[in-house]
Amino acid sequence: MVKNLSDKVKYIGVDDLDLDLFESQYIVPEGMAYNSYLILDSKVAVMDTADARKASEWKANLKEALAGRQPDYLVVHHMEPDHSALIAWALQEYPALTLVASAKAIQMLSQFFENIDVEGRTLPVKEGSVLELGSHSLKFIAAPMVHWPEVMVSFDESDGALYSADAFGKFGALDKCGFYGRDDDDWSCEARRYYFNIVGKYGGPVRTLLDKTAALDIRTIRPLHGPILEDNLGEYLDLYKTWSSYAVETEGIFIAVASIHGGTMAAAQKLAEILRSKGVERVVVSDLCRSDFAENVEDAFRHSKLVLAASSYDAGVFTPMYEFLHRLQIKGYCNRKVAIVENGSWAPSAGRVMKEMLSSMSNIEIVDPMVTIRSRMKQADIPALDSLADALIR
Image (cartoon, rainbow, N blue to C red; front, side, top):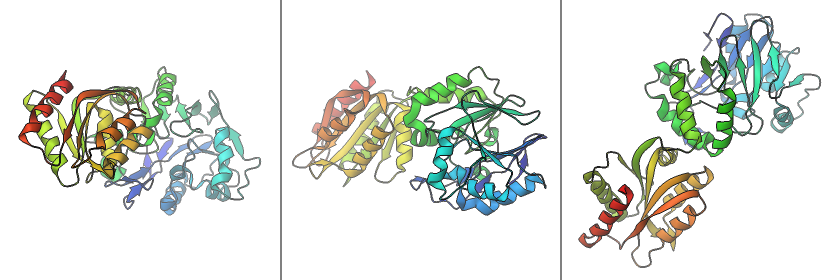
């Protein structure tokens, strides 16, 4: 779609409603947006390209928005292929085009495009560099590891626009979630799932970027995925401050369950019932075997406390729990209280493995007592679950 954002700035991005898995791992039932922008000033700047899957649509949008003008610059904020797949085409199609990017991004070009020749056609930018376009000018801010090392964001002071690369992005095509954040019924839900699974490991770099942009008069955020944000920017910025500092967003208990034959799930549901009876307002139970792993990662980071309930398996822990904890390890899970419920029919081993995996995470407090169920929960197990509930509440 081509949409006017102002008299000189157009949106030229594309929706992908047929994508099954983003990054070949994240389900996207509402599709995905690949955002791209065009600034038509004394000089013309194309702001990123799109994924190869939507090449023909993006090219058509660009040509329609240009209306016969020739672009002077292609600004590349991020080299990940869903935003950069059409760089080589653009350079070939427009011989006078100069590619503007960080030195690291320019170095990466040959990794993605074989035999690409950019001699004399690149303009490396770094922290503080300014690209003058006329009434619009782009000031570049280095954002390494948000979430790749070459990332830059840019700020256009004339309209207060922060071109934020993958920061402030979310899952969902604009056709489904709305063009602007105010049109989005629950921006935070898919933005949170996106953040913790795509960017979340790099909380430190995200905080650094937030600090760098704190003094800017930001009036709109134009990310590479998801709606353009204009209203209630403080709400979005506050969420990013919470997420990037690994702080608790929602007081509550998330119970993640990996149950083979239902015995472990029954114990987890009983624990949830006990917690609610003791006044815990928010208790969320998820079946790791049948739910979206990315949403489970999101819920673990969102809530103040986590319960791991898993069956023993092959002298270890049932694989869905192992995979869940591995995800938390690589995403930097930290600063939480975690309780453990294990189940085993002859040699319970799940608790030991879960403790070992938690030990690699920072500032994790394991809540005692660990509860061991033998095959099926019985009346004799309920006092231990009750004690664990009290310990979690304390």
